[in-house]
Length: 167
Image (cartoon, rainbow, N blue to C red; front, side, top):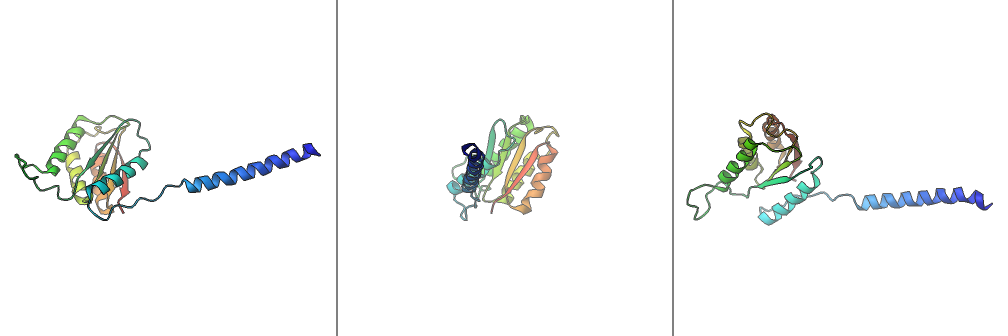
């Protein structure tokens, strides 16, 4: 009689454990991220960091993230050369793309001003070598209306394109 109950006990244990696992999985489901309603840099940087953290599948090396605040196209007070933050980021990203990016790395771009960030990406990837980003990926966090032009510029350089809507 006792031996007959062993398979039944094992079956019941398996059912109980599988039920617990499903509850744990449901509790561990990621919370949907919401972009900040404001243009506060600290809030946006925190949000973008979370989005980047969730979209690193296939990244085996480093993540290089680029951020533009709203108003990045006006020169900073006291800036002697008259360059804007946009100009500086554009130079920086263009140099990175020209030097090439090693496979397994990711370039991540995000800003409260999606159109301006899309402009930066497109301009940075103009004249990129077709293998400059082979084996790497580019994450663009922005508005859907900016995604297609960013995708076209990025894919010319050989990168995998990943888009996350900032909503």
